[in-house]
Amino acid sequence: PATRWRALAFLGVAALAAAGVAFALLSGPRAGSHAAEPGAAQAAAPAAPAVAAKNEIPAPATVELAVAPWGEIHVDGELKGIAPPLAELTLTSGRHEVEIRNAGFPSLVLSLDLAPGENRKLKHKFQ
Figure 1 (cartoon, rainbow, N blue to C red):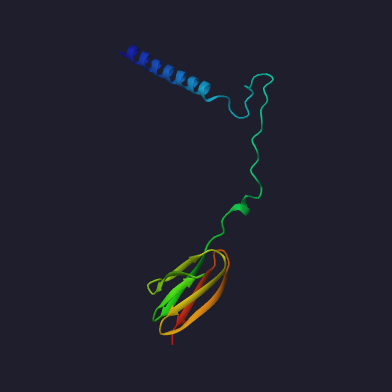
Figure 2 (cartoon, rainbow, N blue to C red; figure 1 turned 180 degrees about the vertical axis):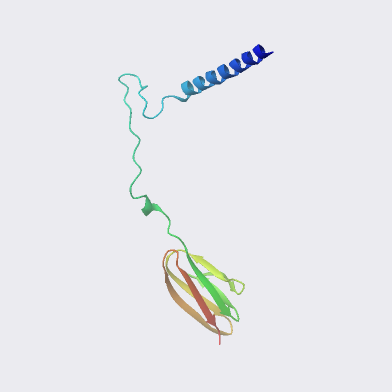
């Protein structure tokens, strides 16, 4: 019985070794290995650009709204909703024209220059 277990263990180890060799052969030469054929040219991988941060999208700005009794919120001429219940706008950084309308009162028009990631509060009470 003990000889049988040793034989099974040996076969298991041999199978694992064979699988490892097959994987190594099928996966090809590793980076930095000298397994290339003589005379074969090897191209170096291009370096990542050092200015990758310039390609990142800036963080959006947030405008928290508190409007009483209510108002239509327009940003750059586009209706975004009615506040309340609309309580927050997420906008790209830069300049935006924000207009708050309520049919019974004159509109409020503001030009906001928002920085990336900025959090601004906009409070207005129609009177």
